[in-house]
Length: 431
Image (cartoon, rainbow, N blue to C red; front, side, top):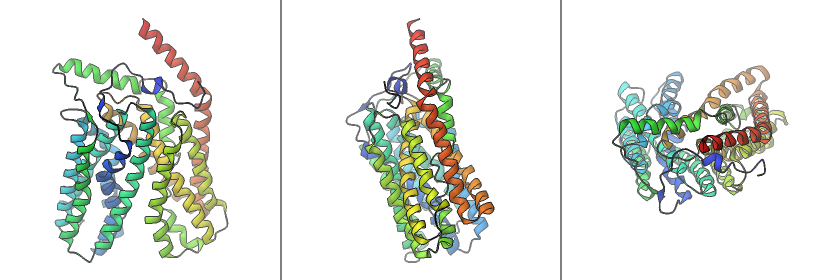
């Protein structure tokens, strides 16, 4: 087997059988299934809707940043409650429940008056928590896709839809502000979140693994977690996801340095708004063209290097408008591809979904938010030390080096360790 081919049996092996999804996998459907979470996280919270509405209500920038930080917290800790999506009812039912509740809670929060009120913040936080049930459910369902090619395509559409629906919700809600009453705006926001959740009814149906014996159930859960996390191959995958490979941390910082490149505010709004979202969504979908026989971990690291070179155009090129547009366009497109390949790496790391697919997906996926957090701080430090170029230069150097290091591992030692682990597991199974 070529060193850059998919791990195949290693990526999908496990001691337990995987519950089969009924009917066609329809990988394109995941671009729609993720919509409720995308509207909340990429639109309302981090996309700028909260910040825009808070400014209209006279809320201070410091208070607004506190609200956004609080509402962003569920994306990092949702593995604490996501295990529920593996039990009681099917994952697509949990997706419907999570999306509907998130829409109702967000609409009620907007109807409650000022966004910085305790009631509104509690409701929005609860809505953000419920929206993460959508992410966990999608992860578990994607992990149950048996065909590696379809699984890779599903990850690309999943990320592309997340970016597209986030941008669309920002456009709709911001443009409607001032034209409708705050109450009507809340209803529109709730519908944008809850209505797409109905698409869960079209998701592949999966069997519920019911077992009245608690001891046998817990033993099964433990075996699945052990087969994923308590293995030598889990260490490099954890490092890969925790390093700043295509983190996208500079996305929110680039508008702040646009003026230094001679770019106007209107141009920035287009490049980092709808235009940027389309570029990232296009990058995500383009990742589906990569042959599934190529290991996701290898292509992810390669794209991380390309992404670092792309933003290097801004960090080391002339400070002109053309440099900003070219560097930003390349960076946003490759970030979209990196996001799609990140999902592919998560699924490769997780292996077969089986009973605890949503839980294990949530834990692994949460690792991806860690480099975003520390790279925002590191990029800011680079800006204070080297000026406007520092943001892009820091992102470029860190991303390219991290990608190169992990690529070298997966092409050399990674192949040896993977073969050794497989041989050991084969010996154990024969014994």
